[in-house]
Length: 398
Image (cartoon, rainbow, N blue to C red; front, side, top):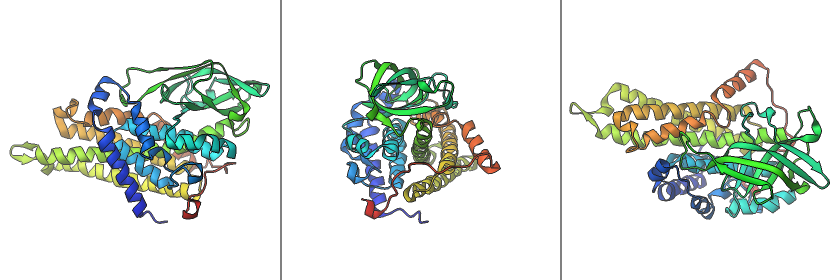
């Protein structure tokens, strides 16, 4: 197990860092203040090759490994969470899940356009009454000849108004009271589909979030991902991918807090002395450093496990749980270090605080991950082999 980054990793990190500085940061204060998302950002990410990360070259991707995906997420969230969310939804929840569960025809049909950014993908699991209780989803799919008819709604869907296609998890209407689920790729242009934005969010204001609705939306059987009955397993494996991107992105918030606090603490003086010399300020800075370094080790481990084809549900849960908690603590301390200035948007730390709070909820709440870790330790939970896994990454696979 070698966690040393390769020269290719360093180039990818530098590319993502420059993209964040040149394309995400300019105007982010205004977009966040006005709660305006930038659709053109998705096109720029496609043109830069960011959306092709971790997709095999045979499907139009860059062929880079899964640690590369984590590095990109860290650097994008260092600029703003709204940019990392694109990677979580489009790349993690949608593209990697399609790569894992799609047929060869489905992968060749959709992945090249997703990798180039010609098409944007999103994910639909959460519903008004089914968040952590995902088995309670009510959206149904009814078999009708060679197609399925979908009815229901999903909420808190990132890129709801921008995505061209959605990986949607439904309950099979024919299952009756039995828990039987299926997953579909649904095109937004199909009759009966519509979306609307959610306004008034605490954080990630520069990102698009909304609801999607299905009113007798008919999809072909060739849009069924996996088999009937695989839907819940597909959803859970999708969350493993999404949690990896959230965990690595959370490290980016910690790094952003250090960027801001290092500069402020060495310039701000109280009674003629830099506040960085105060022990309590140093304690907060030291905790951020620990969160950054431990967080990287946690997501590097998961990236390595993905590279070699190991199931990583427990490990990615741990990384998401701890890294998001550390990001929120780092942002809260960053506001403290900045004092009154941290309470307004003249400095970016208040945005980091608002953005970091959401990650403790989405992709599994703090409480859910606490229970997951305890259940693994107590032997109440154990992983079963998945029917389909991601391609193992190695140099020859490129």
